[in-house]
Image 1 (cartoon, rainbow, N blue to C red):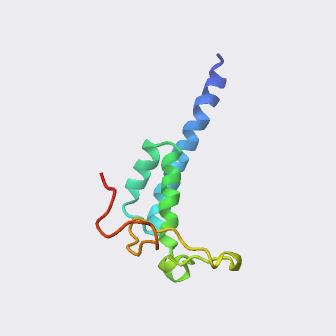
Image 2 (image 1 turned 180 degrees about the vertical axis):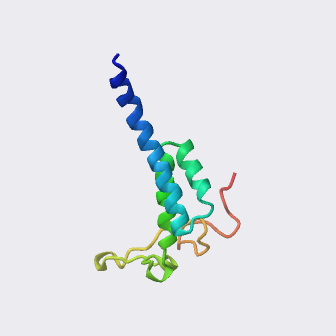
Image 3 (image 1 turned 90 degrees about the vertical axis):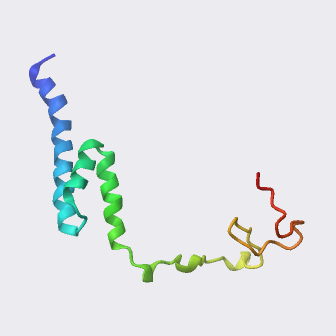
Length: 109
């Protein structure tokens, strides 16, 4: 194999990897994800996946609970489905009418 081809095959991915690590380090310090060396280490130790972890964590900084459409567990229901009943969740203590279960009659094993 030619040395030039080997340099391209190995060098380009390494350059991208180091570049993404540098971007994560620089941007973490700029947006306030402290300490920036931690994000550079995550990006360096987990190639490509670490950079996406950094991006997802960075996106959490801009979360505004006032603009969250699902705040308070409210869900918009289409008018054609308004008369449907919801299924109870495990945390739901209401129970549904006629489910045949009483308080303390759980099937917990």
